[in-house]
Length: 175
Image (tube, rainbow, N blue to C red; front, side, top):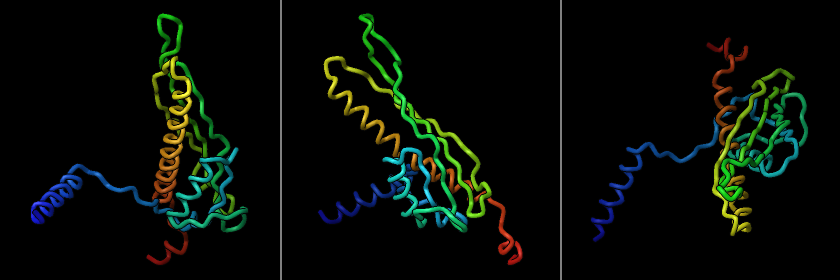
């Protein structure tokens, strides 16, 4: 029995590796983004979740901006719910929840590290007119999911921008 368990565990591990599944890792951000101040319009879940994800990536979150501290500015983070379809009885049957975020990162010297970018995400859901309480819970879960995905998308863009940054004078003279 013990051998069968080992073989099936090995088979599952190989199957996961073969399908391309990988656990999410923290983002590798450049030295210029290792100390960061978050300026999120409205704060809330996005600011809290983004701060947590940045800290998991080794970034020190500063209360105030200043020399040597990058500033992640998010002037817009908004949800919008739109009607997708209406039944023959003029009742809404499908909605879409849209989430738009605009952000940019300035370095500690005031120079743009990441120019202003816009990320749009959306999720569709069906509406049941007989279960309005369930609909509100469904919308809240969709918003949480979109927020989690948005945090990951911002981190991926920060990481990509860091890989494409020109090497500083110290790095250029070392080579």
